[in-house]
Length: 370
Image (cartoon, rainbow, N blue to C red; front, side):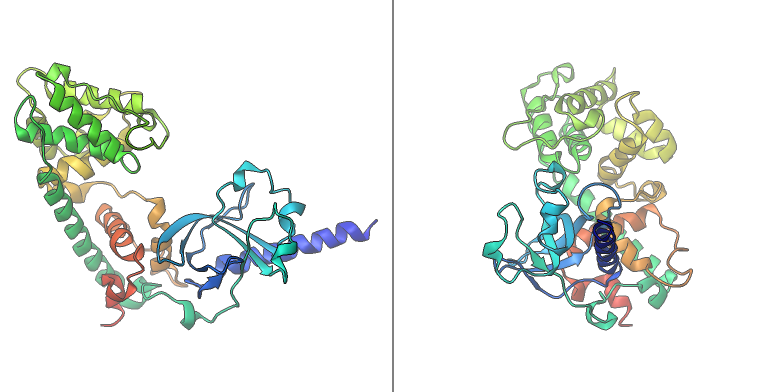
């Protein structure tokens, strides 16, 4: 039947247009209603996925209780497309955050139970109704003003980390309290972003139970008191992280060397040399060595100037914020030179402002009011 393929092609094209409209809209949306009557607000649309799996990955919403949640979204013209596309039983769609449809079913009770609850798409809104205060701020306030503000935010982040690490309690064990604090800070840094607490707890127990440096061997229990979040590489497993921490401890306590003396030496070296000294072939690469410098060594030794020299990194959880700042039709946004302190400032803003939806007190949004 020649009409069948044509109809399917037209439907697919319309759904592609629906995805494009979603990707190109301004955010946040107004509050949307789910089938269950819950009110949700989409803060960022996620990354358009042109391959298998949900249409948009890593979207962020505020649920009815004001909690920020992140996950994947699937868009359909009609809810029944869920079954037509074979999504039921596909593990890629497990844990879907929202199932958005343009044509809401009149009677949801009549839907096949295999179709997940739906949320209606918002009506198209004009730019003024949805634009966040920080959108296009580089173009509106100028690169120099944004750069200066980001540097101030980065300085506050560095000082906060220095205070937090400096006040870490260290259990009794070998060496000085400062030495034990260095090991705990290193364990916490290398356990980030998901296993920092487990890693820190393992190092604390290892130090507390040891009588000499040689017997400090952190063993991470992936089941207690919280589950281990598996990642990539040696640091992605409890055994791999424990081995890396033991190797660093051994390096930092050879002969007369102590962990605090090793940290002081690393803080004097240029970041490239310090990174090379920290690397462990096949276990600890350049990226995680830089993270150890940024999140443990430099804050604990108050090495602000060295921290500034670190190469810039891009973090997935700040992609939405970065894109908002640089979404312009001129060269102002794309031409902005992102540095390490800029990236760290975005992390701080995402943690204390964006996640809480605190636009009114955001220091970047304040630039637009000057």
